[in-house]
Amino acid sequence: MIEAQALTRSYRKGPVVIEALKGVTFDVREGEFVAIMGRSGSGKSTLLNILGLLDRPDSGSYRLQGVDLSHAGDDEVSAARNRKIGFVFQQFHLLERVSALRNVMLPLLYSDDDADDGAERAERALETVDLSQRADHFPGELSGGEQQRLAIARALINDPALILADEPTGNLDAESSTAILDILRRLADSGRTIVLVTHDRDVAARADRILVLEDGRITAAEPVTSGRRGADVV
Image 1 (tube, rainbow, N blue to C red):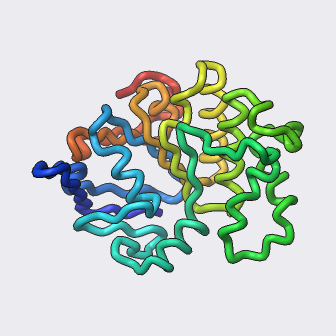
Image 2 (cartoon, rainbow, N blue to C red; image 1 turned 60 degrees about the vertical axis):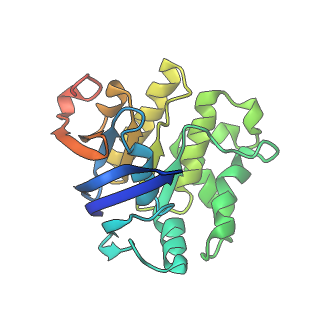
């Protein structure tokens, strides 16, 4: 699914050059649930932006489903991002004046697919996250956990090959966090590829494999056995 090879990315702040990524290399198999764990400033967000085609590396290559998108044209990158990737953020980014169902359907506005069955697809996505009964409610009428479940449904609407989750439980209480991780785990077990970025060891331990990012480099890669998911294994 993902082949990242020697990715580098630097930023300039005035006279200072910040090396966010320093030759990051890793693969993610189709249907794998991978957690990328690291402290603030380790390069997690920069890496996720590259994987999500929101940014480009300075050097190295990023292949998604066998296609090198590192230096592809803007149209090809936009099309791949829309068709192949679903995003789940710490902030839910929902439209407050639009119903849950309509929020889920929003990505279809940017899709070149026939969206005549958009409402039906949105209903199926809401069912996947156990939120069918709230389809006509507005985000302000939902709890934080329900809003994040709604965001996951929105990420699923285009049936993406890859879901990228950036600290998806960061704003939630323990019970809601568990519910979100259960949904992501269920999606992974059904064959969906998921890459989750977190600083929380318990969250990372729900994945199949943990990559530890420190100072722009991957310093460890550990499998998580099925019997230990949910434990502190890093």
